[in-house]
Image (cartoon, rainbow, N blue to C red; front, side, top):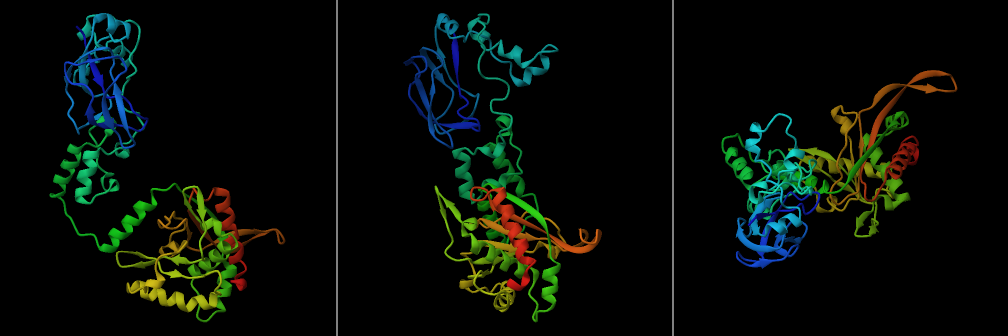
Length: 410
């Protein structure tokens, strides 16, 4: 009598494998077609795998609490030849990958589909092709899109995250990372040069990993900064360009605080106050001191506090009231000679405003019909796309540009 394989089905577009959690029938028991024969667990839910035919369970090749890739054989059901023929299961087995070299020239996956289980039934194809084709998972599914419970447990034991394994090439179905790949990777680390990451580097890495769980986007535009630079020359002491940008951002958000709100469930949580942080490079990382109520405090009054916080941050001596709770951050990557960048907002923030290095460019003046030199800097706004769209982000950057070109009101 034909032995029909029980195959791990494709349980979802991004599901590469599942873990066996229960066998509903033991070897020797009778089952009906489409009856739940075992239960498996994915990263999303517990699901049933149905019997391919009516018959008797003759063997389980799978083990409880073990993970199996889509397309793996979990066991066999023995049925009559008539049942196999009626359900279209009387086609031969797909040749194993290691024997593909011996296949005739021109042999295609379509030829494989017409030979599904001929070796167990002895029948020719009834014309019903099996649903499994080619790769057992979608071609676009990446190896790190699924972590088996066993692999998750091992990673938790070592304090590792999925991002730590992004560079490992998986050997499982469609490049899926297996527990064997993971253990091999760990053993290879012993033969490489290692250095201890600082506590700040680990903290920055954790914050960026959590931030990246959201859909982030970036818009940008060139902003004329000649008016700002002229105003700066009249000040003593002189505010830094980042402080001008911070004050402009604070005023713009003060006009519409929803732009810096956080999406919690189906509600936008508006900030209680416009507290804006600014990035300061410290040893082996970045700190973000916070200026409270930046929309209500003039630029001249913010300057002293700003300079104090920069000094404290570089010495890693920030007071508790100057950290955390900010709704946005300003970063001046132009200090490194960069004109464009896509900074990432902190996990508790929706926005980060970046400003690039100033460059003298020709700008057309309609009144004189000539090109004249002007200083521009590229401003970027990275944002949580769940809260803000491109149009709103563009209008916010435009408003910041307007405020920077009227520095007297800052």
